[in-house]
Length: 494
Image (cartoon, rainbow, N blue to C red; front, side, top):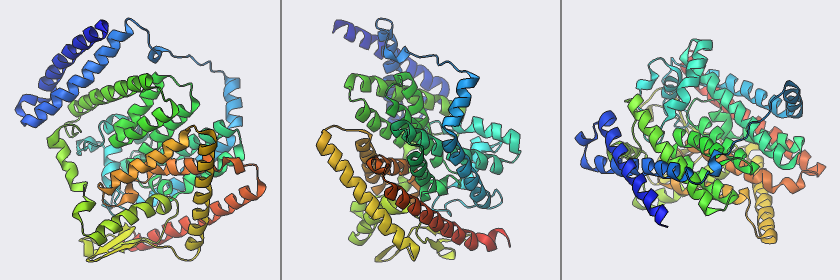
Protein backbone atom coordinates (compact mmCIF):
# COMPACT_ATOMS: atom_id res chain seq x y z
CA UNK A 1 0.00 0.00 0.00
CA UNK A 2 2.87 2.36 0.82
CA UNK A 3 4.39 1.68 -2.61
CA UNK A 4 1.03 2.45 -4.23
CA UNK A 5 0.79 5.86 -2.54
CA UNK A 6 4.42 6.64 -3.34
CA UNK A 7 3.98 5.86 -7.03
CA UNK A 8 0.68 7.77 -7.09
CA UNK A 9 2.24 10.94 -5.63
CA UNK A 10 5.18 10.82 -8.03
CA UNK A 11 2.84 10.20 -10.99
CA UNK A 12 0.54 13.04 -9.90
CA UNK A 13 3.47 15.46 -9.66
CA UNK A 14 4.82 14.41 -13.07
CA UNK A 15 1.38 14.71 -14.62
CA UNK A 16 0.80 18.18 -13.15
CA UNK A 17 4.15 19.51 -14.36
CA UNK A 18 3.62 18.07 -17.84
CA UNK A 19 0.09 19.50 -18.07
CA UNK A 20 1.35 22.99 -17.25
CA UNK A 21 4.20 22.68 -19.74
CA UNK A 22 2.00 21.36 -22.54
CA UNK A 23 -0.70 23.94 -21.86
CA UNK A 24 1.61 26.91 -22.03
CA UNK A 25 3.87 25.75 -24.86
CA UNK A 26 1.18 24.66 -27.30
CA UNK A 27 -2.10 26.26 -26.24
CA UNK A 28 -1.28 29.38 -24.15
CA UNK A 29 -3.79 28.01 -21.68
CA UNK A 30 -3.34 30.85 -19.19
CA UNK A 31 -4.95 33.24 -21.68
CA UNK A 32 -8.09 31.10 -22.07
CA UNK A 33 -11.27 31.24 -19.94
CA UNK A 34 -10.88 30.02 -16.37
CA UNK A 35 -13.08 26.94 -16.88
CA UNK A 36 -10.92 25.95 -19.86
CA UNK A 37 -7.83 26.28 -17.67
CA UNK A 38 -9.34 24.12 -14.94
CA UNK A 39 -10.57 21.45 -17.36
CA UNK A 40 -7.25 21.37 -19.21
CA UNK A 41 -5.18 21.00 -16.03
CA UNK A 42 -7.45 18.34 -14.51
CA UNK A 43 -7.79 16.15 -17.60
CA UNK A 44 -4.20 16.48 -18.80
CA UNK A 45 -2.80 15.92 -15.31
CA UNK A 46 -4.94 12.79 -14.97
CA UNK A 47 -3.83 11.49 -18.37
CA UNK A 48 -0.13 12.15 -17.93
CA UNK A 49 -0.25 10.98 -14.33
CA UNK A 50 -1.97 7.70 -15.24
CA UNK A 51 0.66 6.91 -17.87
CA UNK A 52 3.45 7.86 -15.44
CA UNK A 53 1.95 5.56 -12.80
CA UNK A 54 1.74 2.60 -15.19
CA UNK A 55 5.34 3.17 -16.29
CA UNK A 56 6.50 3.24 -12.66
CA UNK A 57 4.51 0.10 -11.95
CA UNK A 58 5.94 -1.61 -15.03
CA UNK A 59 9.44 -1.02 -13.73
CA UNK A 60 8.57 -3.29 -10.79
CA UNK A 61 6.09 -5.74 -12.33
CA UNK A 62 6.30 -6.46 -16.03
CA UNK A 63 2.63 -6.22 -17.07
CA UNK A 64 0.77 -8.27 -19.65
CA UNK A 65 0.63 -5.07 -21.67
CA UNK A 66 4.17 -5.63 -22.84
CA UNK A 67 3.74 -9.27 -23.85
CA UNK A 68 3.72 -9.49 -27.60
CA UNK A 69 4.06 -12.37 -29.98
CA UNK A 70 5.97 -12.32 -33.23
CA UNK A 71 3.87 -14.27 -35.73
CA UNK A 72 5.73 -16.22 -38.37
CA UNK A 73 4.77 -15.36 -41.94
CA UNK A 74 5.44 -17.56 -44.97
CA UNK A 75 4.25 -17.48 -48.56
CA UNK A 76 2.80 -20.99 -48.24
CA UNK A 77 0.86 -19.95 -45.14
CA UNK A 78 -0.36 -16.82 -46.90
CA UNK A 79 -1.58 -18.82 -49.91
CA UNK A 80 -3.45 -21.23 -47.64
CA UNK A 81 -4.92 -18.30 -45.70
CA UNK A 82 -6.21 -16.75 -48.94
CA UNK A 83 -7.76 -20.04 -50.04
CA UNK A 84 -9.50 -20.54 -46.71
CA UNK A 85 -10.97 -17.05 -46.77
CA UNK A 86 -11.61 -16.70 -50.50
CA UNK A 87 -15.38 -16.37 -49.98
CA UNK A 88 -14.98 -13.55 -47.48
CA UNK A 89 -12.44 -11.76 -49.66
CA UNK A 90 -14.66 -12.09 -52.70
CA UNK A 91 -17.64 -10.73 -50.77
CA UNK A 92 -15.56 -7.77 -49.60
CA UNK A 93 -14.46 -6.98 -53.17
CA UNK A 94 -18.06 -7.22 -54.37
CA UNK A 95 -19.27 -4.72 -51.79
CA UNK A 96 -16.30 -2.44 -52.49
CA UNK A 97 -17.42 -2.29 -56.13
CA UNK A 98 -21.07 -1.74 -55.18
CA UNK A 99 -20.20 1.02 -52.72
CA UNK A 100 -17.89 2.67 -55.25
CA UNK A 101 -20.51 2.69 -58.01
CA UNK A 102 -22.99 4.37 -55.66
CA UNK A 103 -20.43 6.72 -54.15
CA UNK A 104 -19.29 8.05 -57.51
CA UNK A 105 -22.85 9.23 -58.12
CA UNK A 106 -23.39 10.82 -54.70
CA UNK A 107 -19.96 12.25 -53.78
CA UNK A 108 -19.32 15.11 -56.19
CA UNK A 109 -16.92 17.94 -55.45
CA UNK A 110 -18.97 20.19 -57.73
CA UNK A 111 -22.12 19.81 -55.59
CA UNK A 112 -22.45 21.12 -52.04
CA UNK A 113 -24.53 18.31 -50.49
CA UNK A 114 -23.88 19.00 -46.80
CA UNK A 115 -26.87 17.71 -44.78
CA UNK A 116 -28.72 16.66 -47.95
CA UNK A 117 -28.06 12.93 -47.81
CA UNK A 118 -29.71 11.99 -44.51
CA UNK A 119 -27.80 14.74 -42.70
CA UNK A 120 -24.35 13.54 -43.88
CA UNK A 121 -21.59 16.12 -44.29
CA UNK A 122 -20.01 14.34 -47.23
CA UNK A 123 -18.77 17.49 -48.97
CA UNK A 124 -16.71 18.67 -45.98
CA UNK A 125 -15.49 15.18 -45.08
CA UNK A 126 -14.22 14.64 -48.62
CA UNK A 127 -12.15 17.78 -48.15
CA UNK A 128 -11.03 16.84 -44.62
CA UNK A 129 -9.82 13.44 -45.77
CA UNK A 130 -7.96 14.25 -48.97
CA UNK A 131 -8.15 17.89 -50.14
CA UNK A 132 -4.76 19.68 -50.00
CA UNK A 133 -6.11 22.34 -47.65
CA UNK A 134 -8.75 20.15 -46.03
CA UNK A 135 -7.11 20.10 -42.62
CA UNK A 136 -7.92 23.80 -42.22
CA UNK A 137 -11.60 22.89 -41.82
CA UNK A 138 -12.81 22.75 -38.24
CA UNK A 139 -12.58 19.32 -36.59
CA UNK A 140 -15.04 19.26 -33.72
CA UNK A 141 -14.37 17.76 -30.31
CA UNK A 142 -16.29 14.48 -30.87
CA UNK A 143 -13.54 13.54 -33.37
CA UNK A 144 -10.50 13.90 -31.05
CA UNK A 145 -7.72 13.06 -33.54
CA UNK A 146 -9.51 12.14 -36.75
CA UNK A 147 -7.01 14.02 -38.93
CA UNK A 148 -4.19 11.82 -37.62
CA UNK A 149 -6.13 8.72 -38.69
CA UNK A 150 -7.76 9.81 -41.95
CA UNK A 151 -5.35 12.30 -43.56
CA UNK A 152 -2.41 9.87 -44.13
CA UNK A 153 -4.44 7.31 -46.14
CA UNK A 154 -6.24 10.20 -47.84
CA UNK A 155 -2.85 11.52 -48.95
CA UNK A 156 -1.88 8.08 -50.29
CA UNK A 157 -5.08 7.82 -52.30
CA UNK A 158 -4.46 11.30 -53.67
CA UNK A 159 -1.25 9.93 -55.21
CA UNK A 160 -3.41 7.47 -57.14
CA UNK A 161 -6.46 9.58 -57.94
CA UNK A 162 -5.13 13.16 -58.08
CA UNK A 163 -8.65 14.33 -57.17
CA UNK A 164 -9.67 14.72 -53.54
CA UNK A 165 -13.31 13.73 -54.15
CA UNK A 166 -12.32 10.52 -55.93
CA UNK A 167 -9.54 9.78 -53.42
CA UNK A 168 -11.80 10.15 -50.38
CA UNK A 169 -14.55 8.18 -52.12
CA UNK A 170 -12.21 5.26 -52.85
CA UNK A 171 -10.86 5.26 -49.30
CA UNK A 172 -14.38 5.30 -47.89
CA UNK A 173 -15.59 2.45 -50.10
CA UNK A 174 -12.44 0.41 -49.47
CA UNK A 175 -13.01 0.63 -45.72
CA UNK A 176 -16.63 -0.33 -46.40
CA UNK A 177 -15.42 -3.51 -48.08
CA UNK A 178 -12.93 -4.18 -45.26
CA UNK A 179 -15.60 -4.06 -42.55
CA UNK A 180 -17.57 -6.73 -44.49
CA UNK A 181 -14.41 -8.86 -44.49
CA UNK A 182 -13.95 -8.28 -40.75
CA UNK A 183 -17.49 -9.47 -40.09
CA UNK A 184 -16.73 -12.57 -42.18
CA UNK A 185 -13.69 -13.27 -39.99
CA UNK A 186 -15.79 -12.80 -36.87
CA UNK A 187 -18.37 -15.45 -37.77
CA UNK A 188 -15.93 -17.77 -39.53
CA UNK A 189 -13.76 -17.86 -36.44
CA UNK A 190 -16.77 -18.30 -34.17
CA UNK A 191 -18.53 -21.12 -36.01
CA UNK A 192 -16.18 -22.32 -38.76
CA UNK A 193 -19.10 -22.21 -41.23
CA UNK A 194 -18.26 -20.37 -44.49
CA UNK A 195 -21.85 -20.30 -45.77
CA UNK A 196 -23.34 -18.88 -42.59
CA UNK A 197 -20.49 -16.36 -42.32
CA UNK A 198 -21.23 -15.31 -45.89
CA UNK A 199 -24.94 -14.79 -45.20
CA UNK A 200 -24.49 -12.72 -42.03
CA UNK A 201 -21.69 -10.63 -43.56
CA UNK A 202 -23.86 -10.02 -46.63
CA UNK A 203 -26.66 -8.88 -44.31
CA UNK A 204 -24.32 -6.30 -42.77
CA UNK A 205 -23.09 -5.16 -46.18
CA UNK A 206 -26.62 -4.85 -47.56
CA UNK A 207 -28.01 -3.06 -44.51
CA UNK A 208 -29.17 0.47 -45.30
CA UNK A 209 -26.67 1.84 -42.80
CA UNK A 210 -23.57 0.23 -44.30
CA UNK A 211 -24.77 0.39 -47.89
CA UNK A 212 -25.38 4.12 -47.50
CA UNK A 213 -22.34 5.15 -45.48
CA UNK A 214 -20.09 2.68 -47.24
CA UNK A 215 -20.87 4.85 -50.27
CA UNK A 216 -21.46 8.38 -48.91
CA UNK A 217 -18.25 9.84 -47.51
CA UNK A 218 -18.47 10.59 -43.80
CA UNK A 219 -16.66 9.58 -40.63
CA UNK A 220 -19.11 6.82 -39.76
CA UNK A 221 -17.94 3.93 -41.92
CA UNK A 222 -14.47 4.42 -40.43
CA UNK A 223 -16.02 4.32 -36.96
CA UNK A 224 -17.90 1.15 -37.87
CA UNK A 225 -14.73 -0.56 -39.14
CA UNK A 226 -12.89 0.40 -35.94
CA UNK A 227 -15.73 -0.97 -33.79
CA UNK A 228 -15.89 -4.24 -35.75
CA UNK A 229 -12.10 -4.59 -35.62
CA UNK A 230 -12.12 -4.16 -31.84
CA UNK A 231 -14.97 -6.67 -31.54
CA UNK A 232 -12.98 -9.19 -33.57
CA UNK A 233 -9.97 -8.77 -31.29
CA UNK A 234 -12.05 -9.06 -28.12
CA UNK A 235 -13.75 -12.18 -29.48
CA UNK A 236 -10.41 -13.94 -29.97
CA UNK A 237 -9.76 -13.85 -26.23
CA UNK A 238 -6.02 -14.12 -26.77
CA UNK A 239 -5.34 -10.56 -27.91
CA UNK A 240 -2.97 -8.72 -25.57
CA UNK A 241 -4.11 -5.57 -23.83
CA UNK A 242 -1.53 -3.68 -25.90
CA UNK A 243 -3.30 -4.69 -29.13
CA UNK A 244 -6.73 -3.88 -27.68
CA UNK A 245 -5.55 -0.45 -26.54
CA UNK A 246 -4.11 0.30 -29.99
CA UNK A 247 -7.39 -0.77 -31.60
CA UNK A 248 -9.50 1.25 -29.17
CA UNK A 249 -7.48 4.38 -29.96
CA UNK A 250 -8.81 4.20 -33.51
CA UNK A 251 -12.34 4.17 -32.13
CA UNK A 252 -11.52 6.96 -29.68
CA UNK A 253 -9.87 9.16 -32.27
CA UNK A 254 -12.55 8.94 -34.94
CA UNK A 255 -15.65 9.31 -32.74
CA UNK A 256 -15.19 9.76 -29.02
CA UNK A 257 -18.57 8.42 -27.85
CA UNK A 258 -17.96 5.09 -29.57
CA UNK A 259 -15.16 4.39 -27.10
CA UNK A 260 -17.91 3.63 -24.57
CA UNK A 261 -18.81 0.62 -26.73
CA UNK A 262 -15.22 -0.61 -26.51
CA UNK A 263 -15.45 -0.41 -22.73
CA UNK A 264 -18.75 -2.31 -22.74
CA UNK A 265 -17.46 -5.11 -24.97
CA UNK A 266 -14.22 -5.37 -23.01
CA UNK A 267 -15.86 -5.80 -19.61
CA UNK A 268 -18.43 -8.27 -20.97
CA UNK A 269 -15.78 -10.43 -22.64
CA UNK A 270 -13.12 -10.01 -19.94
CA UNK A 271 -14.92 -9.46 -16.63
CA UNK A 272 -11.75 -8.82 -14.65
CA UNK A 273 -11.78 -5.38 -13.05
CA UNK A 274 -8.02 -5.04 -12.62
CA UNK A 275 -7.50 -5.68 -16.33
CA UNK A 276 -10.39 -3.37 -17.22
CA UNK A 277 -8.88 -0.51 -15.18
CA UNK A 278 -5.52 -1.00 -16.86
CA UNK A 279 -7.09 -1.06 -20.32
CA UNK A 280 -9.34 1.97 -19.80
CA UNK A 281 -6.60 3.93 -18.02
CA UNK A 282 -4.07 3.46 -20.82
CA UNK A 283 -6.59 4.01 -23.62
CA UNK A 284 -8.14 7.18 -22.16
CA UNK A 285 -4.79 8.67 -21.16
CA UNK A 286 -3.18 8.03 -24.53
CA UNK A 287 -6.35 9.30 -26.22
CA UNK A 288 -6.14 12.58 -24.30
CA UNK A 289 -2.46 13.04 -25.18
CA UNK A 290 -3.08 12.26 -28.85
CA UNK A 291 -5.91 14.80 -28.79
CA UNK A 292 -3.47 17.38 -27.44
CA UNK A 293 -0.95 16.57 -30.15
CA UNK A 294 -3.72 16.71 -32.76
CA UNK A 295 -4.93 20.13 -31.62
CA UNK A 296 -1.35 21.43 -31.54
CA UNK A 297 -0.62 20.09 -35.04
CA UNK A 298 -3.95 21.16 -36.54
CA UNK A 299 -5.09 24.54 -35.12
CA UNK A 300 -8.55 23.94 -36.60
CA UNK A 301 -9.09 20.96 -34.27
CA UNK A 302 -10.97 21.37 -31.00
CA UNK A 303 -10.24 19.71 -27.66
CA UNK A 304 -13.24 17.69 -26.53
CA UNK A 305 -12.76 18.39 -22.82
CA UNK A 306 -12.52 22.19 -22.93
CA UNK A 307 -15.90 23.81 -22.14
CA UNK A 308 -15.46 26.54 -24.76
CA UNK A 309 -14.76 23.93 -27.47
CA UNK A 310 -17.46 21.52 -26.30
CA UNK A 311 -20.10 24.28 -26.30
CA UNK A 312 -20.40 23.94 -30.08
CA UNK A 313 -22.13 20.58 -29.54
CA UNK A 314 -25.12 22.34 -28.01
CA UNK A 315 -26.24 23.02 -31.58
CA UNK A 316 -26.78 19.27 -32.06
CA UNK A 317 -28.31 18.59 -28.65
CA UNK A 318 -31.95 18.55 -27.64
CA UNK A 319 -33.96 17.43 -24.64
CA UNK A 320 -37.13 15.47 -25.15
CA UNK A 321 -38.23 16.71 -21.71
CA UNK A 322 -38.35 20.27 -23.06
CA UNK A 323 -40.45 19.23 -26.05
CA UNK A 324 -44.24 18.97 -26.33
CA UNK A 325 -45.57 15.45 -25.85
CA UNK A 326 -46.23 14.81 -29.57
CA UNK A 327 -42.67 15.76 -30.47
CA UNK A 328 -41.05 13.82 -27.63
CA UNK A 329 -43.05 10.70 -28.47
CA UNK A 330 -42.21 11.16 -32.15
CA UNK A 331 -38.50 11.33 -31.37
CA UNK A 332 -38.64 8.14 -29.30
CA UNK A 333 -40.58 6.29 -31.99
CA UNK A 334 -38.22 7.59 -34.70
CA UNK A 335 -35.19 6.30 -32.82
CA UNK A 336 -36.79 2.88 -32.25
CA UNK A 337 -37.72 2.56 -35.93
CA UNK A 338 -34.28 3.79 -37.00
CA UNK A 339 -32.40 1.32 -34.80
CA UNK A 340 -34.52 -1.73 -35.55
CA UNK A 341 -35.85 -1.08 -39.06
CA UNK A 342 -34.27 1.76 -41.06
CA UNK A 343 -30.77 0.56 -40.14
CA UNK A 344 -31.44 -2.67 -42.05
CA UNK A 345 -34.16 -1.86 -44.61
CA UNK A 346 -34.54 1.48 -46.35
CA UNK A 347 -38.02 3.06 -46.30
CA UNK A 348 -39.22 5.70 -48.75
CA UNK A 349 -37.50 8.92 -47.60
CA UNK A 350 -39.05 12.36 -47.45
CA UNK A 351 -37.63 14.88 -49.92
CA UNK A 352 -37.31 18.57 -49.08
CA UNK A 353 -36.28 21.53 -51.19
CA UNK A 354 -37.12 25.20 -50.92
CA UNK A 355 -39.07 24.65 -47.69
CA UNK A 356 -35.75 24.01 -45.89
CA UNK A 357 -33.97 26.87 -47.63
CA UNK A 358 -32.21 24.94 -50.38
CA UNK A 359 -32.52 23.89 -53.99
CA UNK A 360 -30.62 20.58 -54.05
CA UNK A 361 -32.93 17.81 -52.73
CA UNK A 362 -32.63 16.96 -49.06
CA UNK A 363 -33.53 13.45 -47.86
CA UNK A 364 -34.70 12.52 -44.37
CA UNK A 365 -36.51 9.63 -42.74
CA UNK A 366 -38.92 11.89 -40.87
CA UNK A 367 -40.92 15.06 -41.32
CA UNK A 368 -42.06 17.53 -38.68
CA UNK A 369 -44.90 19.99 -39.10
CA UNK A 370 -46.62 21.74 -36.18
CA UNK A 371 -48.43 19.09 -34.18
CA UNK A 372 -47.36 16.15 -36.38
CA UNK A 373 -44.25 13.98 -36.35
CA UNK A 374 -44.30 11.80 -39.48
CA UNK A 375 -41.99 8.82 -40.04
CA UNK A 376 -40.89 7.28 -43.33
CA UNK A 377 -42.97 4.25 -44.26
CA UNK A 378 -42.60 1.16 -46.42
CA UNK A 379 -44.66 0.16 -49.41
CA UNK A 380 -45.06 -2.98 -51.48
CA UNK A 381 -42.27 -5.48 -50.86
CA UNK A 382 -40.94 -3.28 -48.08
CA UNK A 383 -43.89 -4.22 -45.88
CA UNK A 384 -43.17 -7.90 -46.47
CA UNK A 385 -39.54 -7.31 -45.50
CA UNK A 386 -40.59 -5.58 -42.29
CA UNK A 387 -42.68 -8.61 -41.30
CA UNK A 388 -39.83 -10.92 -42.29
CA UNK A 389 -37.31 -8.94 -40.23
CA UNK A 390 -39.66 -8.70 -37.23
CA UNK A 391 -39.85 -12.52 -37.12
CA UNK A 392 -36.05 -12.74 -37.37
CA UNK A 393 -35.62 -10.31 -34.48
CA UNK A 394 -38.21 -12.13 -32.40
CA UNK A 395 -36.61 -15.54 -32.92
CA UNK A 396 -33.14 -14.10 -32.22
CA UNK A 397 -34.38 -12.50 -29.00
CA UNK A 398 -36.07 -15.70 -27.81
CA UNK A 399 -32.97 -17.81 -28.53
CA UNK A 400 -30.80 -15.27 -26.71
CA UNK A 401 -33.01 -15.34 -23.61
CA UNK A 402 -33.11 -19.15 -23.73
CA UNK A 403 -29.31 -19.33 -23.79
CA UNK A 404 -29.06 -16.74 -21.02
CA UNK A 405 -31.40 -18.72 -18.76
CA UNK A 406 -29.76 -22.05 -19.52
CA UNK A 407 -26.13 -21.04 -19.15
CA UNK A 408 -26.51 -18.15 -16.69
CA UNK A 409 -23.44 -16.59 -18.27
CA UNK A 410 -22.90 -13.60 -20.50
CA UNK A 411 -21.37 -13.58 -23.96
CA UNK A 412 -20.79 -10.85 -26.52
CA UNK A 413 -24.50 -10.74 -27.32
CA UNK A 414 -25.14 -9.02 -24.00
CA UNK A 415 -22.44 -6.53 -24.94
CA UNK A 416 -24.24 -5.84 -28.22
CA UNK A 417 -27.54 -5.32 -26.39
CA UNK A 418 -25.82 -2.84 -24.07
CA UNK A 419 -24.21 -1.06 -27.03
CA UNK A 420 -27.63 -0.69 -28.69
CA UNK A 421 -29.05 0.63 -25.43
CA UNK A 422 -26.18 3.09 -25.02
CA UNK A 423 -26.74 4.49 -28.51
CA UNK A 424 -30.48 4.73 -27.95
CA UNK A 425 -30.03 6.76 -24.75
CA UNK A 426 -27.31 8.94 -26.31
CA UNK A 427 -29.30 9.84 -29.41
CA UNK A 428 -32.51 10.57 -27.60
CA UNK A 429 -30.91 13.93 -26.92
CA UNK A 430 -28.17 14.24 -29.54
CA UNK A 431 -28.37 14.61 -33.31
CA UNK A 432 -31.02 15.69 -35.77
CA UNK A 433 -31.34 12.69 -38.09
CA UNK A 434 -30.70 9.51 -36.02
CA UNK A 435 -29.91 7.47 -39.13
CA UNK A 436 -26.71 9.49 -39.52
CA UNK A 437 -25.28 7.59 -36.55
CA UNK A 438 -26.62 4.16 -37.54
CA UNK A 439 -23.18 2.66 -38.43
CA UNK A 440 -22.34 3.03 -34.74
CA UNK A 441 -24.87 0.35 -33.84
CA UNK A 442 -25.61 -1.55 -37.09
CA UNK A 443 -22.78 -4.01 -36.42
CA UNK A 444 -24.14 -4.70 -32.91
CA UNK A 445 -27.63 -5.40 -34.24
CA UNK A 446 -26.45 -7.69 -37.05
CA UNK A 447 -23.90 -9.51 -34.87
CA UNK A 448 -26.52 -10.06 -32.17
CA UNK A 449 -28.90 -11.58 -34.71
CA UNK A 450 -26.13 -13.64 -36.33
CA UNK A 451 -24.92 -15.11 -33.04
CA UNK A 452 -28.42 -15.78 -31.73
CA UNK A 453 -29.56 -17.58 -34.91
CA UNK A 454 -26.35 -19.61 -35.17
CA UNK A 455 -27.96 -22.82 -33.75
CA UNK A 456 -30.13 -22.88 -36.90
CA UNK A 457 -27.21 -22.61 -39.33
CA UNK A 458 -27.26 -26.33 -40.18
CA UNK A 459 -30.94 -26.23 -41.10
CA UNK A 460 -31.30 -26.04 -44.89
CA UNK A 461 -34.78 -24.54 -44.70
CA UNK A 462 -33.51 -21.74 -42.47
CA UNK A 463 -30.56 -21.07 -44.79
CA UNK A 464 -32.89 -20.94 -47.77
CA UNK A 465 -35.21 -18.48 -46.02
CA UNK A 466 -32.22 -16.35 -45.01
CA UNK A 467 -31.03 -16.25 -48.62
CA UNK A 468 -34.50 -15.26 -49.88
CA UNK A 469 -34.57 -12.47 -47.30
CA UNK A 470 -31.21 -11.16 -48.53
CA UNK A 471 -32.38 -11.17 -52.15
CA UNK A 472 -35.53 -9.24 -51.20
CA UNK A 473 -33.42 -6.85 -49.14
CA UNK A 474 -31.11 -6.23 -52.08
CA UNK A 475 -34.10 -5.43 -54.32
CA UNK A 476 -35.51 -3.06 -51.71
CA UNK A 477 -32.19 -1.24 -51.37
CA UNK A 478 -31.88 -1.00 -55.15
CA UNK A 479 -35.27 0.75 -55.25
CA UNK A 480 -34.15 3.13 -52.49
CA UNK A 481 -31.04 4.27 -54.34
CA UNK A 482 -32.86 4.39 -57.66
CA UNK A 483 -35.30 6.83 -56.07
CA UNK A 484 -32.42 9.00 -54.82
CA UNK A 485 -30.64 8.96 -58.20
CA UNK A 486 -33.80 9.94 -60.09
CA UNK A 487 -34.51 12.72 -57.58
CA UNK A 488 -31.08 14.33 -57.84
CA UNK A 489 -30.62 13.75 -61.59
CA UNK A 490 -31.98 17.17 -62.70
CA UNK A 491 -29.55 18.87 -60.31
CA UNK A 492 -26.36 17.00 -61.10
CA UNK A 493 -27.04 16.43 -64.81
CA UNK A 494 -28.92 19.57 -65.92
